[in-house]
Amino acid sequence: MRIIAGTYRGRRLKAPRGRSIRPTADRVRETIFNIIGHDIRDHNVVDVCAGTGAMGIEALSRGAAHVVFIDKHPRAIACVRTNVAPLGADDRWQTIRWDAGSDLRCLRASKMRFRYAFIDPPYNRGLADRVLRNLIEADVLLADSLIVVEHDHLETIAPPHERIALQDQRRCGKTLVTFLRTML
Image (cartoon, rainbow, N blue to C red; front, side, top):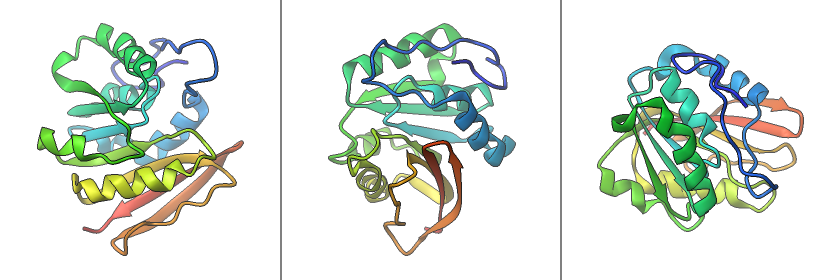
């Protein structure tokens, strides 16, 4: 796994052995960031169910102002810190160990508002919809924010609120990437 573009392009990312953390494939990341384009520059990003932190680190590499990485597993948080610490961008990121499937009220304490949100929970456990709802309920997104949800192609994601619109979907193998836009 490598960072695809930006300041940290080509840097290798570490992933723990085993199957407990499923990193976003380079091809999926490339697809997502080709759609987002350069607009991520100077915006705040939240990477929920961060795993290795690949999505958030890619955002940092492309100029995101600040990234908050959230994951409930200590191994994932340790992996994110291992991957992001050498970048020297200490004032532009933070990690939060939290169960996003329960709620995301942890984001309220930062008083930060986010333009981009990446959600990549374990597949086929009903978590994608739940985490998406929890993110909306946390009320930390700006109007016209983009939410990117990675999920199994057999899972359906329904916009949890009438002010959330489906913008696009792209299939990459067994992964379906759903792009939702807030109209808050």
